Length: 340
Image (cartoon, rainbow, N blue to C red; front, side, top):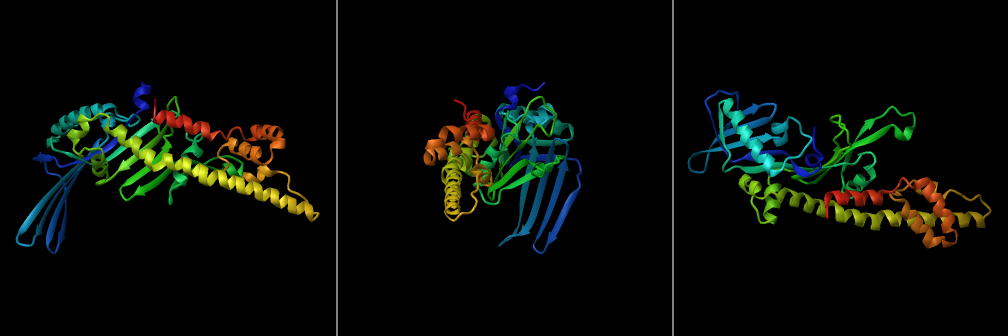
């Protein structure tokens, strides 16, 4: 049975290494690419638990024929250790997985020395014990502030049009080599608890760049010696990319829009009354066309512009919008990510 302290932690999901030596007498299928001044041979070795790309290129340099070698191996440490990818791996897990992987490869007559290897790509994740649907507006707040974010939805069997589909995941590309997504992990495997996963994918040189900002290099040895590095990277990037911007979005976009539309509705009613036309009564139904996010925002508006009826209106708001308690959910999520 999976333990919660292993499930709900920041760790490594998938990792790609390069700059390692590889030797084998076995003959694997090669893909050869001939060009005018170069020849490239690529060998791809795939397995359920890993994939290896071995590339050899010979080309005409400025003065003489030159050659280059590139090796890359990709694997999920936890899948090697336990057979599943629910839990994220610590640096200790990664070390054990590499030792086990080395033995597995040796059994296949593939000999790899990881001593000088470096990190090419890495997925750093955090599982949190919250239901994705229940927290979808909180997660949406992270992605709404970034252009071209995407959502993947599932079609339901509901008879109500507004419930025809539900979001299953959110995805955004922060820059050319860093992506971030949030999705429900419990839909992938039947578990006794809800799991939502927050996932960073650092591609190509992005991990090297980020680790250097913390005074480290991108070598495997450095990562294994600094057990807290992946947690520091994850939290600092999340704070920079989303958290600070989320609170700014609330204060500068969500609240002002609700207030502006509330005043516009009231102004339209005053105009209707002065010209003998029928007034629109349901201000809250109108505000539902915009992002309420949290019921307290409506109470604040009433307190500012209709304090005389605040008690009556607050009761109405609580009866209808108490489920919009996303500030409480956001704060709970932040406690999980940044525990005291």
